[in-house]
Amino acid sequence: MRVRPGYAASVIEAGGTPLLLPPIPRAAPHYARLCDAFILTGGDDPIMENFGVPTHAAATRVAPERQSFELALLEELGARYQAKPVLGVCLGMQYMALAAGGALDQHLPESTPTHADHYGDAVHAIELEEVTSALSEGQVCSHHRQAVSDAGRMRVLARSSDGLIEAIDDPTRPFFLGVQWHPERTEDERNGKALFRELVTRARDGD
Image (cartoon, rainbow, N blue to C red):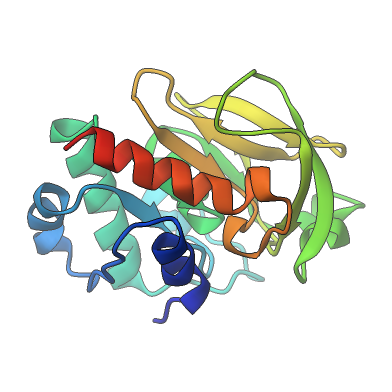
């Protein structure tokens, strides 16, 4: 397991102090209490047996301990710390949706003719379905072969032109936002570094 340095660099640039959390599920309550905000980063593909369906044969399974940890952290935050800001990126957004009763399209090459527009740090446009101060219509940078097909209890905020869900949130919480793209690699400031600044600002406002 590893985390690309772009996440930490983006938090520092936004004025925050990044902490990398070892994925120990039983530590989730301690981390939830300790930290002011959270980023669920990108990574490999979810293990879908935890959600009642088989994992696709083409999936690259995420480390089981990471999945157990991040789901435990989401549960703890939802139960006791709903005011703490959370940003889910790519895999992180997928976990948000799955934890909220949603579902995934596990292999876009089978279902989406334009799947190449979403892989290899491809740049494409997003279109807003809900007006929100956190996001703007514009270009984003993507690298994924799975996508949220059902957001569950989450609200869909944006889609790409081919209909894929690009952003979700929980409108009952101050800042609980998931994006399918990679803001740490997105050149469009509004949907890139601005998301990290918003996260840090929300964390400070909650102090």
